[in-house]
Length: 392
Ligand SMILES: Cc1ncc(COP(=O)(O)O)c(C=O)c1O
Image (cartoon, rainbow, N blue to C red):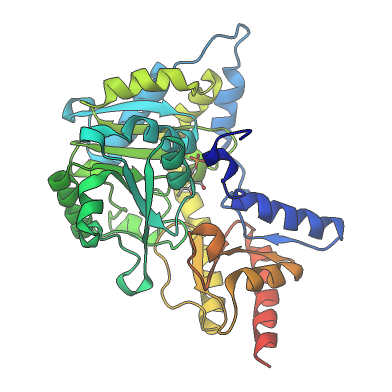
């Protein structure tokens, strides 16, 4: 075999499929409304860009994988402000090159732990890297289907006994891509208690934790993270991509159990994941400010409100999500999700079918509210006409 089995059997990264459709439409000179990839085109806050430009060095040196002092200080201030944790409360941090690489690499440190446990559990639908990283690390990926009936909540205590006992780590992702679901503190307490009773490392993909309904701010409410509850056997993965519109910069961090972090630091020094220092300096500015994030929340909330009311009128969605910038809607009755999205794409509106964001979940499609309000409105009119035309 030319390359190993894991590599040869990888499915096409779904976003690449969407990019191909998009290109075809552009070549045909069709106006494209791209709700496919979660990469909103809102300008990055100017002081962040300025910090990056001003710190471009004349002499280039290797960046710190742990984070430059300015970034480390800024991250601790952010963590204390929102989650009440400090360096002295049992946590340590590691800068990451966006959260994707950290999510990918952590499996290499987890598969085989605790006497040889190899199962990595994760939500389905969900971010595809949970699965691929488990496979590349020689682990056993275990998708856990999320269902609308219980608000898309994970319930690992319902898994078969052999799965519970062999699980090395469990991913949670609330606010959740693609459903927009959040987790209550009470449910999070249950998840933490289950992980601790089963010696499972809890991995919280918290990259949407700052993207929630802006009316929560006045109530002092935020989506919870397990780091507020305990440091024991917990890692949280945070990112500036969605919070600060910095997808192209690649900056995030891992915060977690200080007992486990020294070994993780040593491992990460091998992975080649140091973020360029000028990006780290821009990231320090981003974590220190909340106003530009509040502005992004307002923008996303407006788009969610608008799109939700259109989809609700069409009978494709029931509950408005309180976080993220995604809508997870049912495809019209009698339609298969991939067919529906491909047909809709021909009208110029690109969305993602549930089968491309999951391991076989059918009947839904995701809108990532990336286009601006004007284009969103135009696209929703096209979508409405298209869905209505299916009924006649
Ligand atoms: C659920 C989830 N986790 C992680 C990521 C990775 O984001 P980044 O590497 O830009 O921080 C994404 C990106 O879309 C995501 O949707």
